[in-house]
Image (cartoon, rainbow, N blue to C red; front, side, top):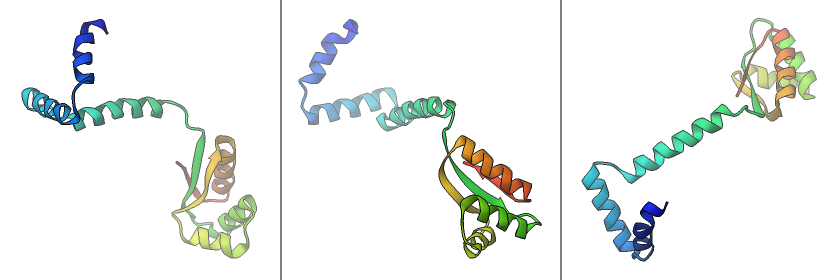
Length: 123
């Protein structure tokens, strides 16, 4: 922005101590905080990222439901675990079944466990 070219040149030549004093003076003059402005700016960026579709999911078993044995079998089959490992995961619900899954894989895992009676959350 040509409008601020002179101001930018002045700021470029300032020492760190002078820059710090300038920031403090601006904060006092306008009743704002540089940290609050930075956080607000990051919030706008985070909102834009959240609008993008998620491609990697964590599958969490929220509840085993009433058909605990069927859910154990489904978890064992889908994740390729031993019976004890599957039982431990189901008993520990809510528990993370698998992290870093692609959307299609996560949906497939969710479908199979929910058909067996469990409740799944995709995060």
